[in-house]
Amino acid sequence: MRSSLVSLLFVIAGCAQDPAVLSGPEGLTISNRVTGTIEGTFGTGDSAIRFSSVADKVVTTRFDFGAATVTYVNDRVAGTGSVSTSGTLSARDHEAVLGLVDALGKQFIQEVQTEDDLAPAELMLDKMASHLAIAPVDTALGDHSYESLRDVRYISCARQPTYLYQSYTQQWWYAWTGQGGNCEGRCGVGCGWDNTYWFRWGTGVYSQDCALHDYGLQEWTYAIDDYAASSNCTHGI
Image 1 (cartoon, one colour):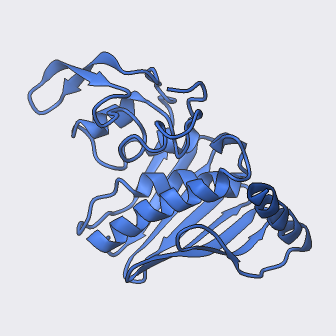
Image 2 (cartoon, rainbow, N blue to C red):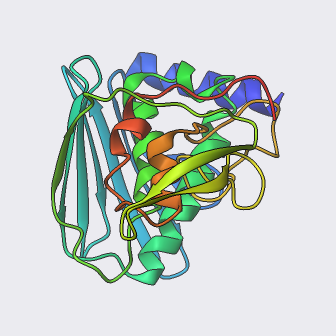
């Protein structure tokens, strides 16, 4: 009943284009949600994030921490995108992003069965929050653009061995990727909600680029196209 009621409230708000504040789980507040736009805040402890995601020909998703901002622009049709930043993320900002990722998952799971069923603005908000959660702390993040010429190189959702190239020793080495351990190869922090629900949520994608990041062989921006353009695993653990 609660899920149906929440979904109905959002449908009513969207049809009427009512900007009234809608409180979500654990500090999540959605202040504006109409077709093509979602805006709000997330607060935890002394930290707060203002977020917005607007879908037009591209999707622009922005996270504002006060002392730092991170803006993603994604064109899923062209397969291109960019991230521009100012300031640095503190440890408290990082904890707030982790909380936002979890809160968005809990909110959206009431409305759709898989993340890929979300409208473009909500989908990219969820995906880019997951990507931001792997950004380094107290380090200038810089700007980055991508063109997904490689496409997404998926690995199995199940735990499996694979060979990875260890660039600083110029050698190939054998490693486990996929589920198990810290779910190396998953695009996102840790194992996400993989072990909680029958479907995967919060960029539940396993890819070679994300594995390279997880094993410390690439920077946080390396797999951004995998976050933006990939489809989730949908067949359970």
